[in-house]
Image (cartoon, rainbow, N blue to C red; front, side, top):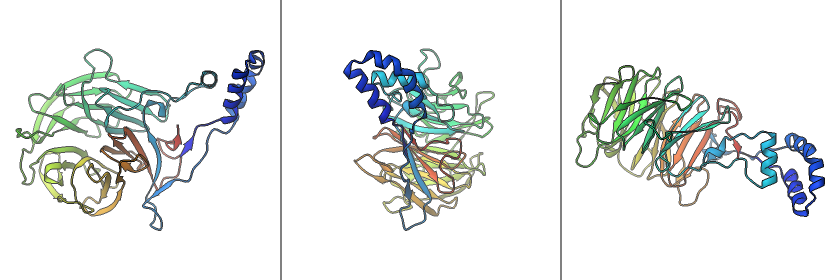
Length: 379
């Protein structure tokens, strides 16, 4: 972690203001701009390793994001203004109830069901964008699942509108696909790498039989097929929560009510499944978000455990990270939901209760490397 701080410059400014030395302040403004810009602003703290010693570290906790202020970049004049007024240059919109997350080359998209928007935070450019609040047909009402293709286009599943909304990487709305004919409660979404095919999860409900995955062609915006229905057999689902595409193009589905992960091809044929209900490692109680990495490992969030578990494609447990807690802190969760793994292997986890996103760096990736780069720069 790093902390943005410059006590010497701040103290000088506040002292000058409090003593009323306006003339002196006017004379030294330019000098202070220069000194503030050049003085140390980063304090490094030893990273937190997972698993803890003496086990070999696999991941390091890097930072926690609470809102758009995580990336807002201020220039010298803005920093001076903030120091003079006492404002925080990192102020912005805080998350209210984040749900899901998708990452593309350092740009992090977070859906928020209370704000009714998707926040886009870019750790490369330092900009923050709010998507879905333009006051027109592009507006979101209750965005849940989010996904990106290899161009960074954003796909948002809105459970209230029963629509799939497509935006470009910069948040410009392109079109919507009506899901109401095929779906009752669309919640999760995944898209093929080239952006041609959408897989939308219908979580269904107590009285619904549409516990399934609807497949759409993004070019024609048409429904291609529906995979599964309510049940316990192979290829059937009970309260499915999320879907991810692995490097082998297989679909990995969180089959929540059946407490398992189902693996299917994109035509809907079952390849395998694994998992069971229970409170032991490798089992599931309230499985939620799912993601895969470049090696095909599978990351599954469990809201009851307050963690995410990492499995091989065959279902062998490799590692779990996090714990259920009523106290906020790194890798402490009360209501974890969405998860994603970026191109560099960083893991991003959403917690709705603590209204945060946490980032973990794989041990094989050096600090500061990758698209997210300075992801360990603490605001």
